[in-house]
Length: 90
Image (spheres, rainbow, N blue to C red):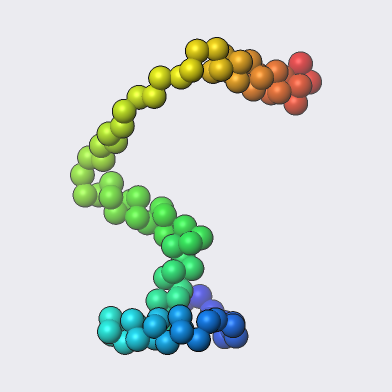
């Protein structure tokens, strides 16, 4: 188990009261909920979530292709290639 750190922070009083009430309604500790929020914000659980989704079966991505505006894409690609070449010394 990772070591724990005690910290003091300043939070709006009304938000704190609501959060504590929410934690009590969920029958969870405030510190556990705060840690979960921090992990989500920092995306620390991303790999675990992706692995869990992969175990549930095939993951299907559904999206509509976007048609590029003529001329802009080729210009962008050219600029990116030029930048890459200048960085590599070519």
